[in-house]
Amino acid sequence: MCSLVFMSYIVLGLVMALGSGFIGAEATRAFFVFGDSLVDNGNNNFLATPARADAPPYGIDFPTGRPTGRFSNGYNIPDFISFQLGSDPTLPYLSPQLDGLRLLVGANFASAGVGILNDTGAQFANIIKMFGQLEYFKEYQVRLSSLIGTAQTQRLVNRALVLITCGGNDFVNNYYLGPNSARSRQLALPAYVNYLISEYKKILRRVYDLGARKVLVTGTGPLGCAPAELAQRGKNGRCSTELQLAASLFNPQLVQMIIQLNTEIGSDVFIAVNTREMHNNFISNPRAYGFETSKVACCGQGPYNGIGVCNLASNLCPNRDTYVYWDPFHPTERANNFLVQQMLSGTSKYMYPMNLSTILAMDPETK
Ligand SMILES: *[C@@H]1O[C@H](CO)[C@@H](O)[C@H](O)[C@H]1NC(C)=O
Ligand SMILES: *[C@@H]1O[C@H](CO)[C@@H](O)[C@H](O)[C@H]1NC(C)=O
Image (tube, rainbow, N blue to C red):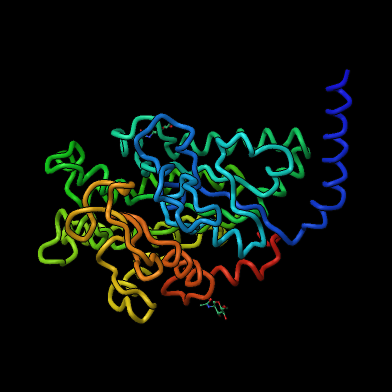
């Protein structure tokens, strides 16, 4: 009885919030995130996997000073996009806190270690593969429908902004994992890239079918220049040629595929984000952005602090803001902020066919 009364309070509160807050928040868009460790806000904390960032010094510059599961010293790319939307950061879909009204903000489905292919990241055991993330997106919509109805749910999803970041692990944690990976024995690099692009297209098509209408799709960064690759593959501090070649094949084909897909759909649903070019700017001239180094990771060990994982036993730099890389693979909070600034105002060289400012200025009802 008691709990029934309590329940109806919650329902009443929800209805009131929907009547005022939700409708009043018309200008705010929901935000959904899919992909890998570059955008995971903590889903892997809830999974039995070694791919996790839930121990110090991760999160050292987060407002709480505590690790959150983000692969950053502080905020990551989705967080800075959320701030532009005027919203709180998206909660991980697996977080028990993601419930009730919080569902209206959106959700983060990303899982560190995943790639485009189902076999990427197999060494990380229990991670949420891309198709699994999309199944959760479907489940999310069912949950939200039970709160606000199917029509409002569909409207919220259609109006939302979506970010997808994956592909790097298909090289680093699959094709180039070890000198003789199954995929590298099966396919030459150009054929492998073609295959990745065709599988990625299926994922994007599914995102569209699930209701997404404005989707930022990031290419891979300059994979060969990450501190991990400088330490393991690069010669004398030069970026790894194999991984740079992989990124230079993958990124332009991704843009072509996105243009093709938008043509098939008849609308500019997908936006290509050239993170490689953005990142290259830091690498070619770190000081222009106030960075001391783009080669050495802040947290790690060995050459370039690029070996192994970042933990309490690692070297840790005193000023994270002067480093492009936080750990052997992932950017610092400050670099993430710059990347989002570029998404906002970048020209068509960085953002094709439009930048994030243009999207934010558009009426979300525009199809
Ligand atoms: C990957 O897995 C999903 C479902 O788990 C399946 O639908 C899809 O066809 C698989 N992709 C490949 C290339 O096997
Ligand atoms: C990108 O965004 C800015 C606003 O910050 C806008 O003035 C500019 O025209 C946009 N550029 C392109 C190429 O869309």
